[in-house]
Length: 148
Image (cartoon, rainbow, N blue to C red):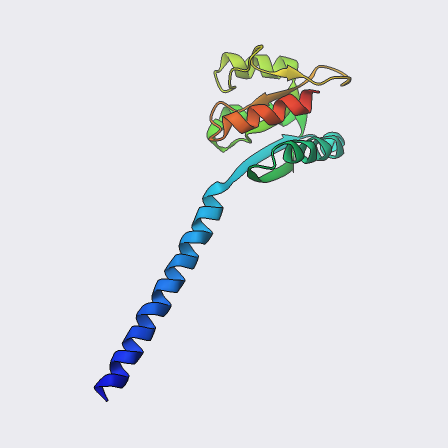
């Protein structure tokens, strides 16, 4: 009888150890996944999807979860100013609004200023990185691809 109890206890300990290891491995994968949120107007969603795919293809050494959300150009400035920490990591915005956000210090400094102009974009559309982004380095890489 004691032998059976010991065998059951040993099996239980081994099973618990295996489950713990699986949880650790799952947590490691989740920690390695970099989350980036991107905002852009409805008419630029296909464009942004293409740029996100290009970004992921160029950065296969890292795992990304990129969330693309529709955010109207008219509301980005106020939304970011209201709660910069809750805003997207990367967003498209009008140049004049980007200047306002740069003055408010809610944009990350980029190599050539606080935002980059989109090539061939009608109007003064620019891409910017949120200064409160936890993944600013990767966000900057994405912005550079968006601007190409």
